[in-house]
Image 1 (cartoon, rainbow over the protein chains, first blue to last red):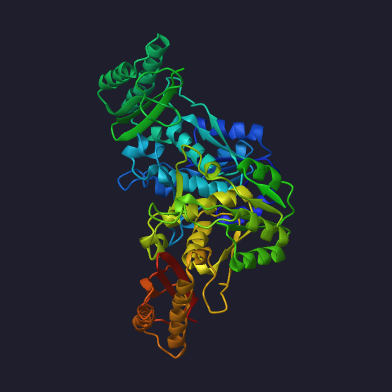
Image 2 (image 1 turned 180 degrees about the vertical axis):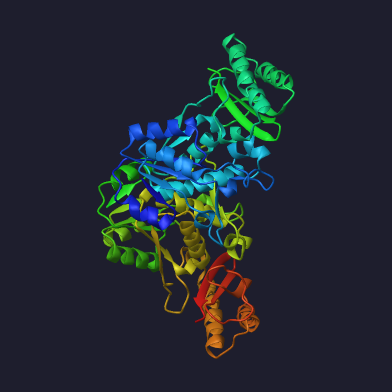
Length: 277
Length: 277
C-alpha cells in the first residue's frame, strides 16, 4: 500500500493503476462505517484509493478542527488490512497552498439545516471533493448515508459540473444500541455515550409513526423533538422531515421522505437520519 | 466534422478520439482571433474540439446576451475548413437544466476591473469552463490573451481545483489598424469603428512611456486616460496598469506589468490589453 502526500505524486502514480478506480474520501480516525465503504469499493473496483484529510475549509471558526480526532498509524494499519492500494494523506498546505482562492458552492441545499447552522461548511465539502475527484480521477467515489446532506451536495455538484464519476452511497453503520458510527463519538464520556442513543431513538419513533400511517410531518417533528427533550444531556439543534434531494421541509409525507436530526450531547454535535419509506 | 448538441453524446463520442485532445471554447461568431486558437490547437493535438456556446451565466441582467451576434452556419463552415474534428454547440437548457445550482467562483481576481464592473461575470466564466473541461476532458484548452483577466481566472481555477489539463494562451490578433479582434466589433457603426482604435492607441502610448523608462504607473494611467478623453465617441470605464497574475493595480512598474483598458464606444463595450515589458 502506497502512502502519498503530494498531489503531483498521486497524479504520477495514477497512470499505473488498473481501472476502474474507486475513491473513498475520509477525514481519518476510521470506524466500521468507513471500512464498509472501503470493502464495497474493493468489491466493485480494481484499484481502491482512500484519502485521509481533515479538511480545514469545512470547519467554521468556532468548530472542532484542532480537536478533531486523528490516528494515522491505526488508520493506515486498518486500510492495509483491507487491501487498499493507495492512501492519499496530504498536509493542508498541499491542498490549499498560499494564494488559494477557488471555491465550489451551490444554491439551495447548502443553505438549509447543516448549511444554515454551519455557514461555509458545504462550500468546503464541495471544494475539497471536487479537488480530490480531479486528483484521483476515479470512476466511482464512496460516501456514507450518515452525512445525507453532504451526499446531496456532492451528487448535485457532480451532476451540475458534468464530472466523470459515479457517486455510490452506502447505508449507515450503527453500534449495537443504534448509535450511528462517527469519528466524533470519540468525544463522548461514558454517560454521554448512553445519552447519544437519543438521535436514533427519535428517528425510530419517527419511522414508527410514519409506518403507522401518519403523513403529518409536523406531528412527526413534534414526536422527535419530545424524545430529545426527555434526555437531560441532549440539546436539540433540529429534528425535521425533508425531501432527500432538496432537503426542504415537507408539510405532508407522501413519497420519499427523510427524517434528519442534529443534537448536542454535552459539547459534542451529532447528526443522524433515517428514510421514512 | 461532427456537430454535437448533447453532453451525453459528447461524452460517448470522446472515447473514440485520438489523444491529445485540444479544446477551443468560444461563444461563436468566429473571427481571426478564434481561428488562430483553432490552428494552434490543430498543430499541437491529434483531435480538436471547438465549443460554441453563448453562456448566459456570464452576462449581467442589463448586458447584451439577447443581442450577442450569432451565425452558426458561417461558424461551422469556418471550422470545417480548419479541419476541426468536433463542434459542441449545446442549447442553454443542456448546460443549465432546471434546478441547476452549482457555481465555481474565486476570491481576489474576480472582484477587480471586469469583475467589479460585471458582477457575476467571472463566476459564469469559471463555471462554464469547468463544465466544458469535464465534458470534453481535453489535455489542453486554448484561450486568447485579449480576455486577459479571464485567462487569469481560468488558470487559477485549473491550478486550485487540480484539474487535469494545460491552459494555452495565444496572442491578441488585431485588425490592420490595431483594433483587437472581437465578436462585439460587429456592433460598431463605421464612425464608431474608426473611434474604436482609441483602445489600442492608448495601450501603445502606455507601452512607449514604459519603454522610454517611465516606471510611474500613475503617469501611465493618466496618459491612457487623456488619449481616451480626446475621442468624442469614447467613454472610459478604466485604463490602468496591473499585475498580470493578481490584476491588482501597480504603483510603480518594475517587473511584469499589464496595461488594461475598457472603453464604451457608443453603446458597445470593448476591452484590450498590452504587456508593458
